[in-house]
Length: 67
Image 1: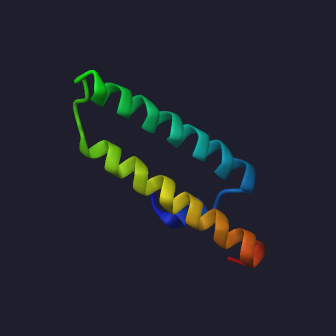
Image 2: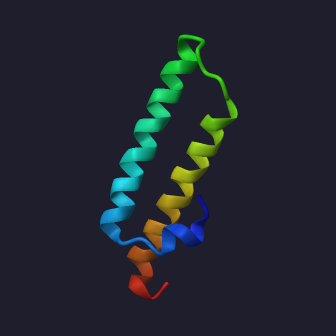
């Protein structure tokens, strides 16, 4: 997901998406542990999405809804 898509979301939507991404990351790590992970690059993508989301969330906290 792109940062511009995260910027369009409300604070509640961002929180819900963050929980969803963290749950997905947990499931991917579990699959990796038991050697059933089909696409190991998906872990990297989910981690980057979490970082983007947290960055946008922090930006909104600092600058309000103007950004």
